[in-house]
Length: 165
Length: 268
Image (cartoon, rainbow over all chains, first blue to last red; front, side):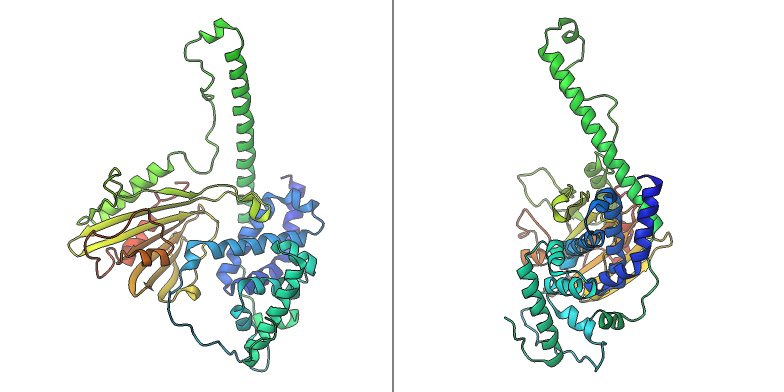
């Protein structure tokens, strides 16, 4: 990469670093994991900077890398290190505490796909079409996942079952 | 909702993302990619020339001692980030660690039809995952399993090595005791005592400066159910080799030392 391109890359990354870390944190719910995800995503972006700059929306391109890096992490052997139990726990009812304190826990309680959709749509300001492109799903699926995700948040807040199936 | 998310996140801790380090690693990856591509062109050119020479009447060339179409160029550089002898090298290091840390244990040969396979590193994933996110990115993932037996019973020792430029361990996702720390040289360490189907498992992982992460696990149980639950892929039936140990063969300290062994690295 030419020095000028590298300078462009650095400027691009530095400006977005804070937002990128927050997005990674919303996905992973752990700051160490979030920083590792951001490092991995930025490395991939560097390696494909020339192509990324040709993209219509470089931010969407970076979000795509970040989300896919997170999905890759979920597939890794160490991410499957969860205790196997035959007892299904009661559905969690999260007390939002009257403010945003419980929002993260509610988000965490959602299935990963819906979590990614909500984060991209409502935190990264991605459109339905951009979210569909990033996640490799249809716009209709994004809409339904968004509705169910929001429904899940409401259900977690109220303890009532969601409306959307 | 974005504001609500930001409020929920609250104070953001200092960043551990080192942009300069990312750029340095990116430069290396790009260089390797270019070198690999150039080597591919070079090898292809040699093959074309060799084929042309082979099928063209040129007795004086064909009679040249040692000249064959399949002979690789003697000057072909080592281009990959992982050495060609990695499996042999890792096997030797792993076996040596076992001999040092578990001198009283013998290997159990899981399959008599095979040659004694006491510890085998297998490349389970080594390719460019270009289709996943449109970005070519090579990763390495090696795995070895040793079945060990001493006076107290049989146990498994498993080593997984991967290369994703991240140390993806968190105590939040683990159901048992665990801690994250750092070694004096800065390598990151994960240590955990986990329960799988009621059986105890010791786990230690070390994230090294060269990008290699080594995870070492010691099991007390040999049941396939347990192996499946932990993501362990066995190509033999781990039954009939005697009773399982009541405690893992190696301690957490010993596992950490194995994981930290500089020989267990993609780029020693």
